[in-house]
Length: 285
Image 1: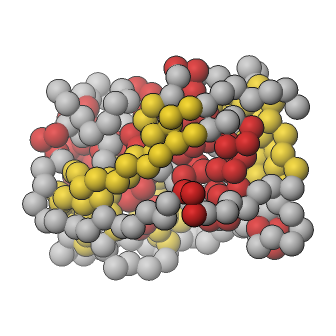
Image 2: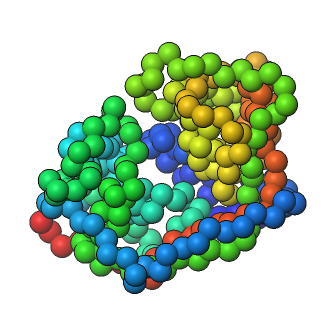
């Protein structure tokens, strides 16, 4: 059964469980409402900001696999594969990364980088290490990949299959967050990645929810709820099957969203892909 990207569900779910931060056959990606693609600035026309100091080391011992941000603009990753670094640097999902040798999905690296004191990033004070990188920090990560990994890439932006997240028309079962500084998280009732037993959200904005769900549907989800701020929510499916296949899992997500007053409708919209043309393992620090 064809899907919207080349990656298998098992690796997508594993990454979602580890990174936080994160699936559907074509039958669930039917299109009807045309949307316009956003413009992409040519890479050659951009001067990327750079970290002042950066350490990149191979890591075979494991550790936290996501990019963490700290006051002063420091960016760390204890255990990141190159594919994940591209995802963080370009703010895309795994289904939006194409090309590259097999090791980009296997070799992991530890990264510790700090921006120049004169940069906007140096004045950042994120509420927690789980806060996403700023736009400038993402551009600095891009520069790091280009410099240390000899990354060469191009972007492809085409009209393709997407979903649109909207209000469902019924009562919204979204509550103000108990802790506005809590880690933004979406998962299952049991506490792991979404597995079909329902949906649980903590301090989650609608754009963040859309991004998280897109990893399961393997196509972009656009937030058109009009809801501002972050929310806590919970919907439990009591009689769920723990051995769900891919299609049933998508169905359970749709049911859970309706349970909290939201809806997904199919559409046609922009799908951007970062294509890796060349990359090398970095030299030792």
